[in-house]
Length: 303
Ligand SMILES: C[S@@+](CC[C@H](N)C(=O)[O-])C[C@H]1O[C@@H](n2cnc3c(N)ncnc32)[C@H](O)[C@@H]1O
Image (cartoon, protein in one colour):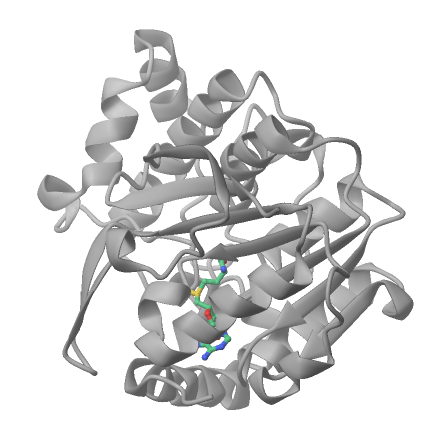
């Protein structure tokens, strides 16, 4: 399978960050190109996420999120060379996201998990507790999967797992569940470093794209891919959709991807509606994602 040039470039950037900072700072470096969004005053006027959060926050949320003390000093933000005003904005926006996710999911169990200190999460507290964008977004995503889920998943397949934020929540919530990550380097190494320190090695398998034929037919009951398929070549994306069709029979597929995105490096325009979704998949959910409103999320049952 061929990597997109987009990910060849980004992978090289992530390799350099690994050499410079080691894996200890992944939540402050690579994660900002996975699914942790940065918030800066200069980008705010164009931020659809910020507009969404403002429109979905109560006056009390806005007041309390703004007035809770935020530590914006350099000692707490090692590895994050942002201005102090942007660090404050990041804390404020993350609190709004957390409160929105809490309300929208009626406190999904993933919001009760403690954000692991491994990987150096950004120092955002809400009512004195460490919170994160990644757990809040994961709660919103797992709440959609819950709509189609019957019982606990026994084996989950994820393509393009980043450092492993979704795997962390699923493996924590379902102690008997196993997880297979398919990714390219250096994400695969990063996810292995992260997840094998948090969970026993026999629960997590890490595969390169060249190894996907090893995944047995009907071996998974859930496949997940978030903000990943749009960044691949069309041929690679099609192969993963066929993999899901083969591996997840009888189970669920959850995708959250750009509705329309121009990949500037490969000069490709990718539209969610043009994905080659197998005709036999039964649609359960398809909606504009909350918060990241340029994304679509969808859930299918695979016959
Ligand atoms: C934007 S990140 C999203 C990470 C994660 N899903 C999340 O939401 O935090 C895209 C992920 O897709 C992976 N990826 C890119 N090209 C891939 C390919 N050809 N096969 C598998 N994974 C790929 C990247 O390494 C990265 O882990």
